[in-house]
Amino acid sequence: MSAQEPTVGVIGLRYGRAHIPAFQANGCRVVAVCQRDQAGAKAVADRYGVPRVFESWERMIDEARPEIVVIATPPVLHHAIALRAFAGGAHVLCEKALAMSRAEAQAMVDAAARAGRIGMTAFNWRFSLSSSWRCARRRSVATSARRSTCRASISRLASRSVCAPAVDTRRLGGRFRARRARD
Image (cartoon, rainbow, N blue to C red; front, top):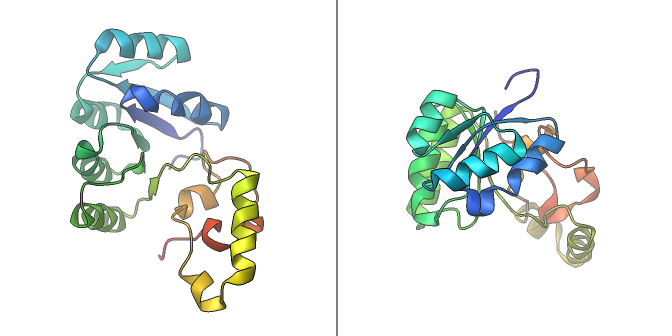
């Protein structure tokens, strides 16, 4: 990623529009949005000062070349978009459900590893205080071996604090602890 503002492209604006101000508030520059409804996409882009609007996610990834791609489309499209984004050198934040099958999800994980990029599933309540409290309570009951298998899929994106909330992830523990991807 660049040393300056990381660039973001958002695909799917029904849920994806919520990510735009969050990324902007955390030092990222949203450079493109994509949605089939061009009038709706243009209205969202104008509201948040996003310079480019695309109808095709393929064109957005190829032409805008964002460093981070947010996938907020129906789950049936997640696999294809994520593979294209990783191939284009982007990190991916994908809304739930990650994929339509375990095989698709594994292919996405493998593509991220091959590209040396981060893939992360959006989980809006990951950093809430109630989540950290529940996690701490579970941790006190769990054995050490069980805790080690209960890590979050936060990934390096959050642990490097690139467009992530200003949260001390060391305090969250258990399955909400940020883990670094293996180099």
